[in-house]
Every structure is written in C-alpha cells, then in structure tokens.
Image (tube, rainbow, N blue to C red; front, side, top):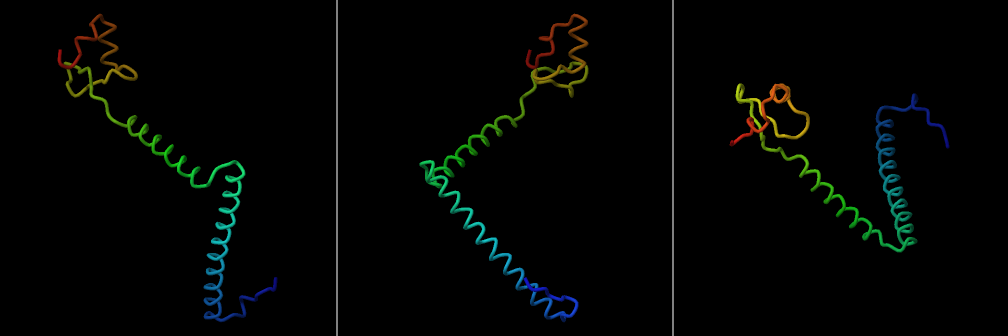
Length: 117
C-alpha cells in the first residue's frame, strides 16, 4: 500500500480523501454483511433449514420471552396493612416487613392485618 503524506495535502484534498474513505468503509461493510449472510445461509442449508425458518423461530421465541417478562413486571395488590400506619402495606410476597415480624413475634395473628377483614 502506498504511503500518503497527509502533511503535504491541502484542506480540500484532505476533505476529499475523507469522503473517499467514508464511502470505502460503507462499501466494505455492505460487502462483509453480504459475505456473512452467505456463510450463515450455507450453514443453515447444511443443517437442513432455510435461514428464514431459523429467523422466524428465533423471533417467536423472543415474543414468548417478552410475554413472560411482562407478566413478571406487573405489580401485586397488597394483602396486609399496618393498622397503626395505613401507608405501610405488604403483598404477602418476599420478606416480611418489620411491623409484621414484630406483631407476629408478640403473638398477634397475621390474619388481623389482612385487608378487607
């Protein structure tokens, strides 16, 4: 590869070179993606699939995972409320808050804190 002496180039020559380099990079990226696609298609064919079959299966798996994730993220309604401070609630899931622990330890049944009872 020939050496380019950038120090001897004018600003307009440098900008022209910059544009050529940008176009060459885009062209190279397109060619590399095309080559990679050909390799992947050949491997899929070797395994007895079309690339579209594999991609469709991958997309449907992603939808299922997203649906499961959405279910996990929904808030749960509280089941217990602290009568001394109604802003303190607990869903009944996870660690018990201190106000529940202390009340149960002192002999108060947890059902007395149930909302709606």
